[in-house]
Length: 162
Image (cartoon, rainbow, N blue to C red; front, top):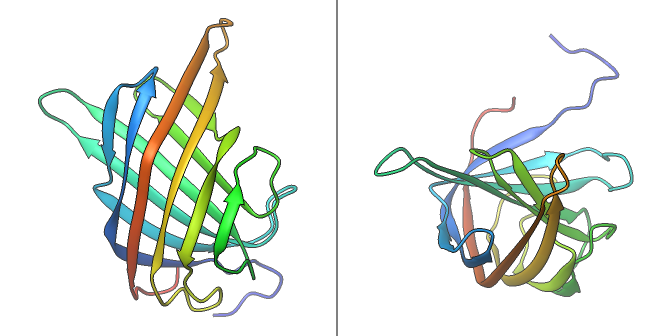
């Protein structure tokens, strides 16, 4: 069946990892246990893009459920980019799903050494990053987060379209 007018999103399972050293609110090493790539439509003020969705999950000895996402605008060439929450080129977000806290990188930079094909999602996603972010919770509590020594090395594995 084919339905006209709906946005088709491509999802590709991936192998590899995203790692970084977290500081301030969370003092830990982030090491992804799951990676996926998505081809995403324009969302609000951010253009069509690749979404690298990564998660670190562990149930023992204590529950860890972190998500780190990287959004890369379609057509963006390899290079180094400044991270800002209003960027139309590249963004990074981090969530602590256990505590319902989310951060968008406010400052820092990302270097994209290699980017997958924007249509097929085939090819490696390689690079480095660091950032600083602030989250303000509903009760007014301010939570700072830093990510240093960030590295990503993701290789795609084709899956069916979803």
